[in-house]
Length: 440
Ligand code: HEM
Image (cartoon, rainbow, N blue to C red; front, side, top):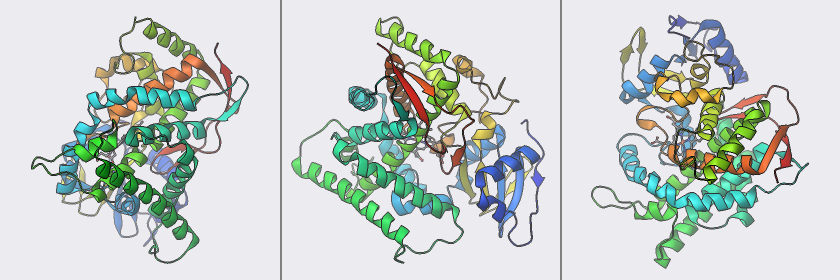
């Protein structure tokens, strides 16, 4: 995938490539990239759309010329639920919020949450030898409980099933809207609208209730909500209730689905490459005997490499969408206002121009991180809008993975290649059934 020439495709009159894209976006971008390479320009209705998966283009748009691009239409639609949280906001509001939120995710604060995460993992990952589990569902449950517990310092187990279902339903509904060309206003009483609004109301009531209770009680807790309530801008202003609600829902969404998918893919790969399960268990043993530093924070260990390699092959955020705001020419590509740009790390991560044996699972390659070309590996994004929860995610994944490998072995029941559902995140379709063996 070394820089191919820009391929300009016309498509059918008026609609351009809209229909094949809408009928299966994942298949469409795969086929187009495979056939025409890493730089493609096409039309969808009256819009010019770029499909780019070359690391230099990805770096130019997300980092070097980020100020010329906004997040665009998809993120406008996500505002229905996420409001003006960090993922969806733009301009000066985003800059101010980003500055206020970064310290919330500092190493010190994540360190404070380590024990809480460990307790939730121990509580929710209890299986017996011979038991068959749906791994995606189990990871979903544990990661939601982790994020809820670290955000609110309350045990949500009783409400978790309902909350989990609400999160699923709301994401599903939003994905449908993101894909559709025409979205009807929410006040039209369609069953899907009613279901979404009901779930959103339950969610909002829960969050506003907690903000109110905390402000009124005056007591301080060791959780992210407290940090959000306490954080101050340069002119000593705190966040209002609505801004805190938007950030909480954003963190719940951003920090839950992504980790669920990265853990599910990691476990699938570990079943397909079972010798790594034993190697990881050995690493936990070494670490507990004090031979290997602190596994959770160090980057130089097999746990980190396995997570990095899993996210190379199956990046939870497989594509980024941007919309050009002000004209800019980058190399041979002229971007004009309103042009849509799809940047697709999925293909850069699997390019044989940048990765040796690109399709193989070989975690050890990540011991030499310095050799990675900019834009060829970006599971957490790149440039100013990069993931704020990266450290949190890495620590959580290592706590979870080390617990699983210390206590269990996993066997995939159906070894067929996984079918994927590619929405905002990339997740395996169907139940991922694994048989458990408990290690004594
Ligand atoms: C494996 C886990 C995760 C992955 C792969 C991931 C990936 C990403 C990516 C790719 C972006 C950039 C999106 C863009 O540029 O359009 C992003 C942004 C973000 N992520 Fe994560 N994320 C993960 C976990 C988390 C966690 C645990 C949290 C919070 C607890 C979090 C919170 C956020 C937020 C708030 C943003 C928006 C940052 C901004 O625009 O200023 N993420 N994430």
